[in-house]
Length: 460
Image (cartoon, rainbow, N blue to C red):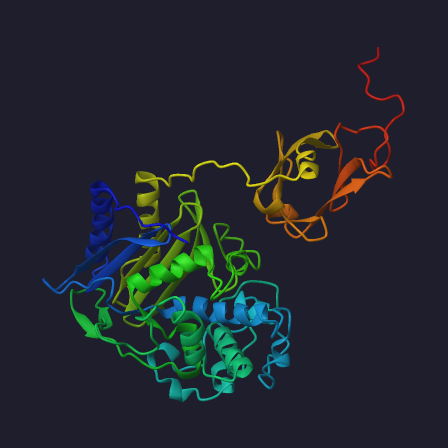
């Protein structure tokens, strides 16, 4: 649940307006609209226009291009959570006859299937989808560009395959499934496959003169799951809040957290960016942003979420090139985060405590590395180094009395308590690492044993 959002301070609002005004002016955009959400609520919207008195608002539709992919990915994760498929399934198992059926669903989601970036000519974004009536027309004769699973290579045809996969498993069109399973539950009534008034028109601005040319708006047909949607700043802020917190009507918090996790290593020159499952991940201004950028002829768009700051930002413009909406949206997050940092929730004691768990808290040692173990909510625990360069993690409780790592080096690893025959605690086992109450504690299961003479000083 989210609480009512306090209004941003006047100075913060002016800084946000200034940022989008600069973007619209320097980017030579016919119009520009942006929004910021805070703690799940719409906190600010602003816009600029080249036509006096006709500025768009947060309810004006713009085409959002590849942000559509995140919606498609959510639909695939829903199928996985319902047990209808596994992300490691080969595509052929659910969508036979594509010619690339050996790639897995996870590889398609994370753009590591090695498929081509674009459909065969003519340029699919500026021509009718009817020119590509079948998947063979989308993939072409040279669909393989890289070894499967070895690297990240962005692929629009890959998300066309995922859209067809959804239709095959659900037995309904991608658009109908999207409306029923995401747009309806999240009350995104202004997000549609075709434009609905009020909506912006797409424009190209001449690179060397301040003149414009209207861009065509094509129905992408089979490639719709890669970039078809139209949406508004307000609707996208609502979607961004879902990507931060999850919503059990659509997708659990655990599954959206999985979407935000890098799926393959970034390219060598892109250590500050990566890709999860249908979501881009970037490091900017010392914070992690997740979401997606998008473009189609006549439109550029961006949606970023800073989970730690509780902030979301959307930037939309109706021009083929010019304003860097991704940078603008990131700046909107930074402006609010720095001017009005998130106020932490009040500390509250746990509602109940298990004495056996309480006895596990305090210092533990892996060799000579010192760690502290503390209790979290829902019987979770956190094991963090007290000094030095050792690794730590948070762990969530399993029903069998063990814990599973949430992040970092220990993500997915099992932490368990090992007891002696009399029931007392001998040590903690974390993926074969032994943690004892004293460094190299005698009588415990320290691999390699402990020297019988024990600790000693310098002997001369």
